[in-house]
Image 1 (cartoon, rainbow, N blue to C red):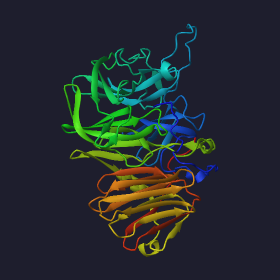
Image 2: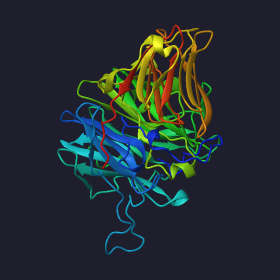
Image 3: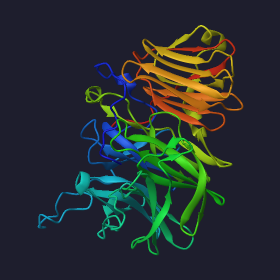
Image 4: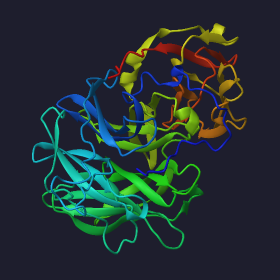
Length: 480
């Protein structure tokens, strides 16, 4: 993750206090203050473990550590002590020049089983700006993943290759191909029209790594989609002989430097990714830095970071900043990525709220913790959720091929998004505090924020629109 603060919206925002009902309740948040990237998701001995970048000391980005929660069912979560944290600036008795490789943060990475032991591979960072060094480090875990010890051999990879030029060398993704261990790292070019790259390392023992060159790169613009200057958090999803390569796109000097996450569909051959198809992994403006794992049932699960869209003065008043998305299953549908909410999330439902007839005139729901699911077709009037001056409107474009999503609130301004309309017309929408996640029946997703004026929401559906509304359980993750 970059040290750039991505939270300032691109539109003017009112100087208002941050109400507590903006905080998501059935999503994973930190015990307090800031969180960002999900890291190292895994199902271990039947239990799901999820780690994330955290700064518990302030509601802004800071030298991160790995927060940790776990769950038996993807719904109810238990908090654990932090897994790893930055080391002291200097080892006792060392010279001033002998810095620790992660003294300025334990940045993103993954968790793997190595020789029967749980191992976290992460980005160790020391220094700032042009003097920053990004290395690959490792920590070994206890059998229950609650205690971690950093490897004495750190850093396993001390710095980028000398001829790379870029200092971006981050977010290890590790797997075993049946013969050797492979590792991907995110990076970018430094000359001409700068663009993202993914680097490849290889190892026989998962400790000593050899640089094998560029795993994949692509021009700044592909099929009209801006892919940024640098890539972060590379991930692979395997589906038979097909592969999804996922990267998160960054433009460091932009107003919103952390842009979006994209995928490429293709194959891996001779240590290189070969693919052409590219698409957005999420059509909103909040989803970034996803991490994936394959669980014991063979599903690929994915979480992303749900960014905030508030000005710094408001963020400074917030006790909880950032959240992780709901768990999604991700798969290949031809050469297209398909994302759906994990089926376990139905256990959050406490019961239907209202009838279709009531929704035609608008029904007031007393808290922003709900799910809408139904069918939306061309010309049926759409769905809307309103809270004072804040609105979320969803409707089908007159040609019937595009879904329009409009968001407006006094904190983050007005934004408009489009999503491909599903063939079935089916949608589900999760609202949790300010966080909104929309899913279509064809596997498209959209994540955004709506900073409601008050906790009461008025939900309305068009006369012909079909929709169920459920209140959702919020007692799923206690504070520390």
